[in-house]
Amino acid sequence: MATSYKNGNLFCENVDVEEIAQNFGTPVYVYSKKKILDSLFKYQRALNSHRYLICYPVKTNYSLSILDLLNRHGCGFDIASEGELQRVLAVGGNPEQVVYSGVGKSKKEIELSLESKIYSIHVESWEELDRTEEISRNLNCRAPLGVRVNPDIDAQTHRYVSTGIKDSKFGVPLEDVQELYQRIKHSPYLEAKGIHCSIGSQLTELSPLLEARDCIVDLVDSLEILGVKLEYVDLGGGIGIAYRQGETEPDISSWVQEIVKPVAARGLRLLLEPGRSIVGHAGILLTRVEYVKKSVKNFAVVDAALTELIRPALYDGYHHILPSHQHSNIKPLLCDVVGPVCENTDFLARDRWLTVQQGDVLAILSVGAYGSVMSSNYNSRFRSAEVIVDGNQVFEIRKRETIAEQIQNEFVVCV
Ligand SMILES: Cc1ncc(COP(=O)(O)O)c(C=O)c1O
Ligand SMILES: N[C@@H](CCCC[NH3+])C(=O)O
Image 1 (cartoon, protein in one colour):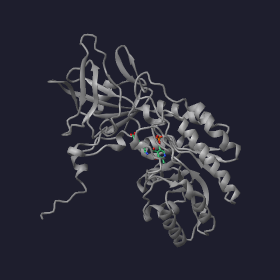
Image 2 (cartoon, protein in one colour):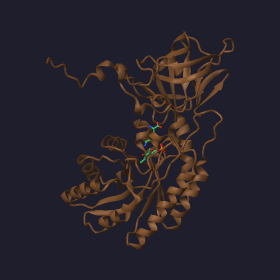
Image 3 (cartoon, rainbow, N blue to C red):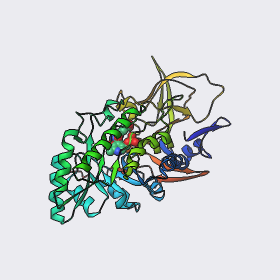
Image 4 (tube, rainbow, N blue to C red):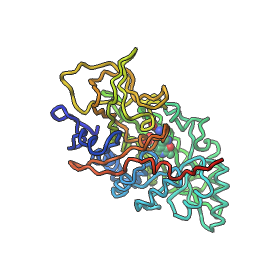
């Protein structure tokens, strides 16, 4: 976790979160630099003696300062759109350390990727292969490719984020893989660089990942027999984190050591795309209690909502909540923590025992991954401010949106 109590007050690194709430307003996203780097270093230490590249998925948290931090610490990037590529380039990321996955790459996105000379495009269909070949022919270049394989493995996670089962839109079926690589091999405009697979997110059971690894390694061997020699294996992201207190989470170091063995034994470079396990616990969302509404149920009505954090509404996601100050004189109250948005699904927590009173600041934990990146302007709410803490220093990395910024691209047309 990025937080701990000192004398009853909640701190992020060496800064009292109450101070952050006062100085930057609420809701505000707060990230711990130390927590991000500690998690990254676990991967790097475990992979130290191998050929590898961590391609941090930009979708997880695309704050420029976080991308810059990871870039300076040796990360490559996994992108899912033109905008994500532009963000990587904006922080001076090396395109030769960028891979691109996604089922709907537009012509413009493929063109930009080839012109920027990214490391590899992960092809997700025959149709996309055709499009890519046509574009690289026009640009008179060879598109560096990996095929994203759909191994039909149940990741045993929330069905919305299980991406490696047969009927999900991601990747190509196993039975097509060899033929796709033959096609790549025989085209002067395509080049087979690697192979890719990412079966889902928030995996707490690691056996599906090992199954996926074995499946990909078998494919590598069968491709070699067909004369297709690859440079890398990319096993995607997916390692889960413990959102609930007392849950255990997968041990990154032992998992990585298991994963790397057969890849390294074949002299291949291992690419991994961990997102949540790097930034998830590094982020908290501070929100202030507007009212403690005592009705048929008790509600702590706060100033954050599903517009800032959609995970509870979308996946019934659990996020632990801590008060910024531990009251000793108030009795805990069983309540739902809800926002001001006009939806029943606008809840951040249900049935929690909290010591809360009006005006208190609450910290919603483990929101560094898929938190601010999934925010919206519903109810014309403003995107939150974001800060990063480094020891006892706090830096604003995104200012709170204003109404002028929110409406700047709109025209009032009198129709
Ligand atoms: C291609 C790809 N790579 C990496 C990730 C990130 O996964 P996680 O944040 O679970 O590590 C995802 C999301 O599931 C993904 O689709
Ligand atoms: N947005 C999801 C994860 C999606 C992973 C992207 N493929 C979450 O919050 O858990």
